[in-house]
Length: 252
Image (cartoon, rainbow, N blue to C red; front, side):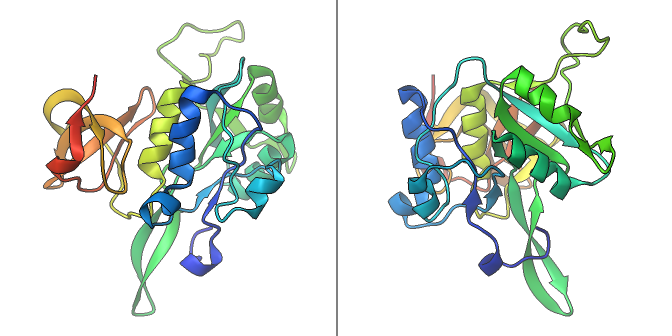
């Protein structure tokens, strides 16, 4: 994906299942179809599965507008080993599960010209929405004779029978919020450390306008700008681009 320009990158290739819970459907639909409501396009984040509905295949985004929290399913974080990202994508695609890979644009100079290069926001990590059984089967698949996908483990939890910590799972609503924060074309979205976040109050807020509308997090000053920070517990902190105070309200 790296090195491709805007014209050659699909806008948002996330595969989704057919039926979704009503309380999160509206948020997810707004997320995917934001270019319709606000006159802008979404970032080309990578979904890898071909099981989209005919309606989704005809849409500009290539994404189904139907979303649901499915019983027994969890968002798992998979780590790609040996830099075999493309092979990992094939394995996940063949498993026909929902997946998400956050991408972002990075400004670089190539042969004296500035270009926006698409790169993973979290290198070598892929998120999948599946049951533990299906996720286990994906982990066991071989690429060139060896397993190229491993769980990102939750080291805050007790060891399982196999002597390892359980896989990290991300709550559905938290993942929805993370996708909102990372699915824009804004190159100023970034992964940050706790030390970089100078929180104003620690109170939870919601963005009510602009390209990050709907994102829930905490206001912090990072790199001299006011941003909203979203936390995926046990994995990362992601900061939006600058957000004016007028677009921020308290959230309880």
